[in-house]
Length: 253
Length: 352
View 1 (tube, chains in turn orange, yellow):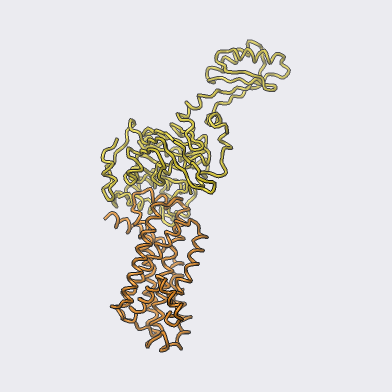
View 2 (cartoon, helix red, strand yellow; view 1 turned 60 degrees about the vertical axis):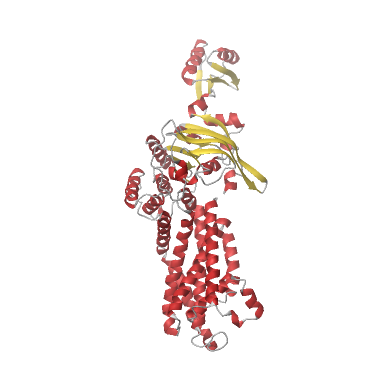
């Protein structure tokens, strides 16, 4: 009870913080919309070809963009955490009896919200352009990708507390970003690629989330792909939250 | 001592009843405290066996140069760091065994402050209170009380990012006492404050002490230790080198009197010798054109000096008096002056 209350209070603080900086809300929205407006048209000629079975190319492309959004929404957490290490906020909170798990989850919940709301908007915008998903699948898809955001958010916060410096964090996150997203096939399905690339992708936890997301958008709800997606992403989220909590418990700044 | 310490350590259990430590209880008791940090030059011992006892209801100062180990000690007392060895009891509870219960009884204002600059001062206070398990209405009332007490009313509804240094510091002190802690810890609380804000903060800390809160602060300012603290522990190189009230500590060292007679006064040496024989004078010697005399106390010693000078017909142009300061204590105990004792590789830097 205390724990839930603390989590809610800390999430509320984060959400207020975000709402006071509307520029970030705006930027968060503009990136996926630019992908839809400026990149998706390039895919048009591929409709019906390999990797794009039937329907609109958007049915394949939008789940990938959503996964990219989920990743991006979570990865910012580390920057905020380092700012709070420097201003002493984390130290102050660590001297209160607040649950360390609640400290992690407060940020995670805000980041999940900051993924789900723009994601819903992207879906609304994409629909008139021929995006024709399976709506029940889509709801489950948002749940799956929310787990991906949670994993990224808690992982980024843990990295931030561990590295303590913006420069190091930026190097690690940008270093991870390209291999993680490209090898997940966020822009084009990896089934288009050669065998070695597909093999490599299987070592990337995010790959399973994106594959499952595409399956869910197309209405294939009960499949091994979806189960794998939830299994891998859920495990990654749990691991990251555990790591984040441990980092808060030990933080020295 | 407070009962129920072990029960209070159970996660999720209700906060212990609000008890005030009375003067006979120790607010802080530290025995044989040791802490070392790994560094590039091997292990650095930040604390090398610190013993301390802080009675409840006083302002207690840790005085020492940067790198002395003050901050490390404070971080262990406030559950932020674990000790390598030694016993640390705060507000009647063992910090290592019951960190969660200790957290409910202490407040902490870190060197970096810790106000959330993206929120308003009032939001900061309310969140802090609620994290300590206070109810919504209780927290609101307490926030209003603190806004009044620390004079935050004119800015507490603005985002803290816009606050001046003094305003932010006041908010941070308020954050430290939202839950009415038994012991309030402050790490270099007046660092970077202008004299006006510094004086105000001193007054506020004295008022807190007068309402029964034990205040423990670190400082590297001599006057802060001397004038604000009821007792002082002088810390250097991971050890307590002297402890007592500022008066006691200063009283161990003589008052220096420098007498400048009219130039050309013939028998300077004879007068100095005679001064040296006075019972209240510790030592008298000639330094250039002046006589330098050390006495135990200015109140009794000065009269004796003047009587003798008048009797010998010495015409005095000027007298300067130098009272001992805590820096003399530090100098005597460590061989260095506190003013230039800073270690380039500070323990605080290693700890962070």
